[in-house]
Image (cartoon, rainbow, N blue to C red; front, side, top):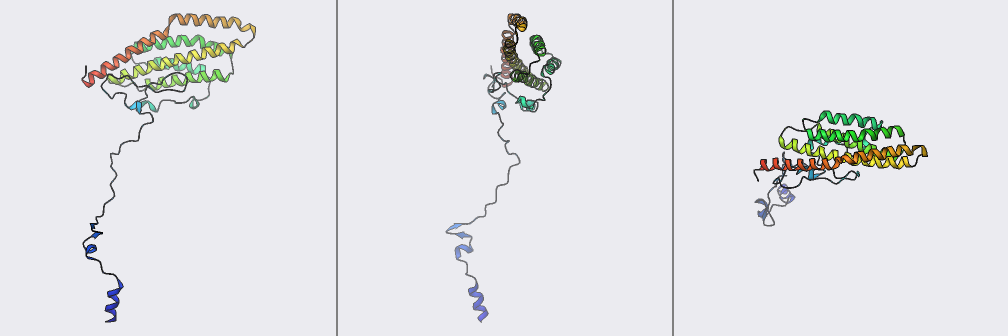
Length: 255
């Protein structure tokens, strides 16, 4: 009998609500933890403007990214090209910059796939660089400012090669790649002009026997400016943008 009363008071009997799975008048239901989806959306890209390159109705301007490298806006970098792009010159090996740039310009020409306008603009770039590179090498300057400008040029040539190595096969991708390469060449021209100005400053600080060389540089600048490669390049960029928009309108079925 004592054992019966002991077991009776050992545990408090459940209320009627508790026996029916209710707590405070509300039925208690075990909610399982949500199963993570296998198709979770990828994380936001570092530069989302690159991802919308071909979204939209084909009438919008091609997005560009601002830059802090003094060479102007950076053209979009598609995901398949991102691994070949150098964002900072600090990632480049410290080697004789001028000789490497000569080699890289030749590599750019070799990588161009049947696009005559890009090849023509690259040859103009090569011609403008040749005289300037000779002056840089003959001066043998250790100026860190001049070296910084040379490194900028090296970086831009390397990134141009990155785009050429992933040129694509479809008309839209090839049109996009061609436009991007032209804009990279435009940035190379800005880099050349910065090297030229820095070179003039250094030469201006040399002894009087360098004056004739300065005059030679200035004369060569006049010859190059007469050709006005920048105007030609701007026309090619405009034509490439129009061609890309035409392809996009065809793909989206819009006029």
